[in-house]
Length: 124
Image (tube, rainbow, N blue to C red; front, side):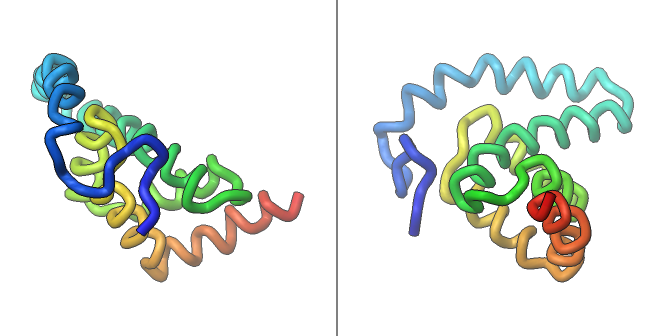
C-alpha cells in the first residue's frame, strides 16, 4: 500500500515524539469543541477533516480537482468518519486516513457526486 510521503506504514516508536508534541493542540481542540454549539462543532470537525483529506487527495488522486473532490468526500462521510479524520488532522495523515478516504470515495453517492461536480471541473 502507498503511504503519505513522510509517514511510516506501521505504528512504531518513530511517530511517538511527534504525537506527544501535538497532544496540547489535541486537548485545546477538544476543549474548543465542547464549548461550541452543535453546528459549530460540526463545522470545526468538517474543516479539520478537510485538512486531513487534502494531502491524501493530492497524492492518491493526482490530476483530479481538489476542491470538488474534497467537497464530495466530506459531504458523503459519516459522522464517525468526520470525527476520525478530524483527529487525523491533528496527528497527521496515516494508513487509517487513507482507508477512510478510500471507503468514502467508493460509496455510490460519492461516485455520483464526483461524476457531477468533479468531472466537469476536470474538463474545464
